[in-house]
Amino acid sequence: MTPLYAVRTTGIVCRVGCGSRRPNPENVVWVTHLDEALAAGFRPCKRCRPDDVHPQEAFRDSVVSQARDYLRLGVGVADTAARLHVSERHLRRLVRQHTGLSPRELIG
Ligand SMILES: [Zn+2]
Image: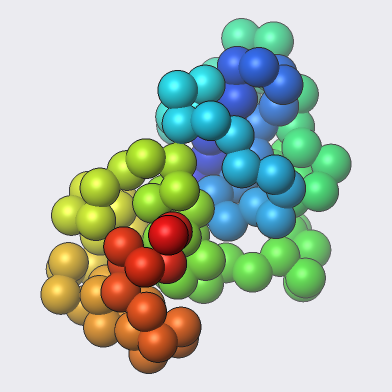
């Protein structure tokens, strides 16, 4: 299952990789299970539908898209790799292959 994050300021839960506007990292709460977020009063995002067990085909679930989100949300490169279950070196190579950029340049 795609990892989720909730945004304190908007009260919305998103999948990592959602195309909606990026929240300020300070307002992000990492969520293990959707139920947990819903119980805390957050609403599922209408765009990435974390409540939908069959995600929209349009939703890009690639490692690179998730990595970009983690990095933009203030997670370090090594931690991002760990969360995506790949080595840091592998992550850097994947990002480079898909975007021609380093992880740092990706969020710059
Ligand atoms: Zn979303």
